[in-house]
Image (cartoon, rainbow over all chains, first blue to last red; front, side):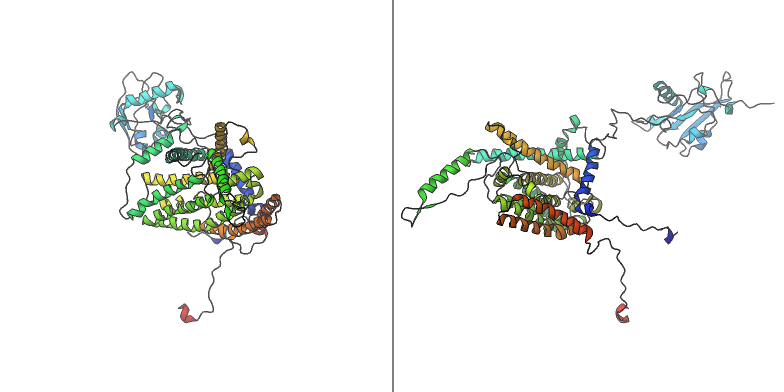
Length: 187
Length: 418
């Protein structure tokens, strides 16, 4: 669609006055700005020595949260795997052990391919029990593709590391499962 | 300095080239560091403490890198260009004083013999030997002391250095390179004139083209900056243009011409171009401090030591400090004034600098001829500067930002239009 003529505003370059035509006052003003920046605070973070301060909603490596009894919080509902646009989450569900009274399913395996993941955070939004979360862990490296396919134990260990380090405290419900995990009422 | 001795001269040349090379290296580091600080960054800090060994790493990289020659270039000139750029830039340093100097003695007068018909040389020869002897005994902080055409030599080589740029752009067989070198040649033709003109006023008063004599004159009578501030300003602007430094770096304008004449160059050849450019910056910084800022003189402070070695060191460091100041100004100006458009660049030279330098030269000639006070020239210099600003501000003949109208030729016969 062409831009309507009424929307176009013609701007004229400001005219230089007498001092402007002398150039030197303008150059002096510019030099003042330039020189003041030489002594100003530097914005650079010297990375390996100085770690960046990330906001708590930074979307880094995933973790699988533990509940108050140190069990995996996940109820294997496949919501995250369904929401994932990159199809990087692979879950194999199994009936929960009889002692786990708060749910009927749990993930036998829970694998995330960290290389396929686009770190959009959809899984975190989809999860009904706040079991999967993205942490502020950003420096993810590996020597092979296989190393970066995270299984359940690895994801749980990310939870241990980040909560212990205090960078990503447990965010919701202090480990208790939400109402979505309640066993269905059977007649 | 004793009689000419090949070994001593070679040692001095070698030492000075070594110093200048490391200075160039550290000038590149300073450029990167100061640029970074101006942009609120830290700058290179990985090689050595505070990145101080970065020039060594850069130099090593330039030497060890593969040096490919594109198949389409004119090989002879392609290889000649960086060598010319660097060699000529280094040659210009030969007459530039870097420490304490004494002006070469004036020619000795020859007297008439007693009979009034022939010339009596015997006395003159003795006098000549005495004067030359005492001159040679003194330490001279120049490679080639007593060169009478000093400043002309520097200018000649300075404009010759552009041949490196032009050859490089021409032989690269690349349109960007060619455009860069075309711009460079136009620029150098335009700015040579105000560059030379602004110096003539100085030479008129000092009575010599020799740089040592110019310093000696300033030590006696005061810096030329006080008497001809406008000449200094014009000289500085022209020198920035000649060094291809911002705001006049059109020959290598990265955003427009990729790399200008440097586009096809890499590794050591690129390094040699850079070396030549920075050496040129150092030479011109020396020139600015020598011709207008009194060289090694600093309000009598330079005479505070009687010990010859201490005095030489002091003078060299005064001159060096001035030179480093100008080198720093180069960098700071780079991030202060944006690049000129090419028509603005040409207009500045031909419409402002050249007429202004002519008028300024005329004023200097009048002051010199009628023996007026030097401060009259100061007044004229500042007055001219203000007058030019006023003319530009209040007397616009052809505003350059006037909208261009489309002219439709109504009167043409149909046949021609069709």
